[in-house]
Length: 75
Image 1 (tube, rainbow, N blue to C red):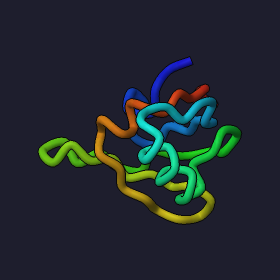
Image 2 (spheres, rainbow, N blue to C red):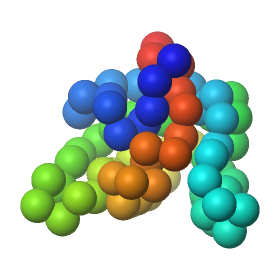
Image 3 (spheres, rainbow, N blue to C red):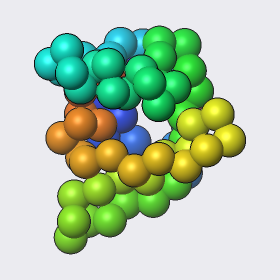
Image 4 (cartoon, rainbow, N blue to C red):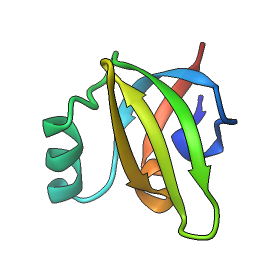
């Protein structure tokens, strides 16, 4: 098991756990990031510390430290 921020671009994973403070957990879950959901890392914006994800046919951007709170299993 690893965290979402450690995936390489194009990598796919399944969310295992949504960590962090309760408000962050709630916000991520509202976006559809729930345990059991498959995600794909589309792009990294290294200078801005942002990652772009594909989740349920939608694209989301998260701060890298938020992505580090998501435990995943690589597919």
